[in-house]
Amino acid sequence: MLVGRVGDWTVLIEESGWTCTEADKAQALSAGTVAVAVLRHDYASDDFVYAVDGELVTHFNPKIPQWRHGSDPDRLNDLMRQAGLDPDDVPGIGAEAPSSASGALLLAARLTGVVLTPEIVKGPLMSGVVG
Image (cartoon, rainbow, N blue to C red; front, side, top):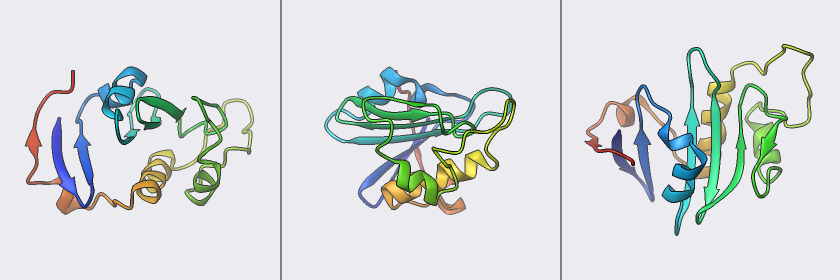
């Protein structure tokens, strides 16, 4: 886990893992604040998580943005549309939303105001473990 500060936000980058998008971890990370997590996975499910003060508000697979859950799964619908993740357009069987990872990162940027540039991702960042 790599950690850095960008404006008012703390950015966690977890290579080869998915800890931060697990519901209980996202809820713990959001205690007293807001947590936004994006998972892009080569061969399994992508994820987007939005948690506020220990509550999982909206959680969905960006490839299938119509299937959302959480305490307020529709809260981000307008921002999702702006990011190309249409929460209402039900795809045909086997169809997935195009560019789900880029849409999820754009949604995260719209929520936080943080754009993950190559300079941010390449450091300097501290390392640690989220348990």
